[in-house]
Figure 1: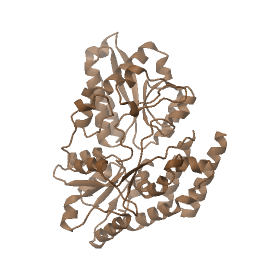
Figure 2: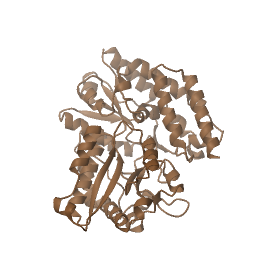
Figure 3: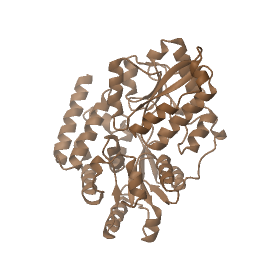
Figure 4: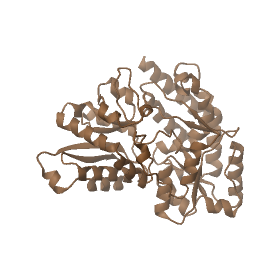
Length: 429
């Protein structure tokens, strides 16, 4: 993926005439590489923008997939070399540090009103790079042909899911592939298992806010951690510790596992279709004991709010700031939205969404869109306001991987993560 990202950076420039023009301003777009679909979307949109702009050339500045993006952003900040447009994490941290410039009305006016929100100072600092479907992409992708051959059903309850794993294993096949070569894919199995617990705190501002206030603790997550450990020990394809997220597509298509974890939604289905157009893929979200499908809502403000931002460093230069606005204006156009949809990405919530052509041709796409209409779908909130939560989250991910690998016990993991949370809360004052 890192190699692919570098290749994308090389092919996303504008025309030679534009690049040579003295009137052209070059800006950088820093983004997190991930699944191949997102990489392709960024490349297509930037290439199309460069081809139609007489004043701006956007250069891709991808971070390799193996990087922890929140940590990488800290490195960018330490070097003082901020790109003009940034795919943000830890938004409030950088807003409070004065690193981001307000996104102007001419950009936000292109979006649905609930797709963005102002910070406490009244300014908007991030705008979404995708549709506000929460973590609907945090799901299980599976081999439909295998299910049909063995008379298996998509699980309707958590117990059904465990029974499904047992049935596949009894057939002599590996039920599930997952990845941990990068730390962030470790969320793909964990979050659906923890969702019922997290959802209990939705009306109180989310689990992590309650825990930071001392009214909940990491020990409250012991039951889903036990479920995670049990599934990893009994049903997951060996070698997950060194498996990259994108590799799970190959493992699924090559029938090394019947199912695979994903956070890419339609993008993973598109990746599978590219590898094997004949592969019949489907997806589902692991339900809870009562059959509810708990899905985390998008946060449009707060430290966990992702989105595109303009750096204050770029805003100090009139030409770079104007070019950043020009690029974002294109990013939220119908033309850009159609490019995204063609690539298997669900475009952001723009006002002109009725002019966008949705891509329902990808095998398995009907499963994804059906989730939005599922009567058992329950949205919950869990948006931490702790300014250093990314440090806690990275530590928790790494600790979970160690626990899953048998290096530490569940109780040791809970104690370590609680200590890290307490330290970060104390440091934040």
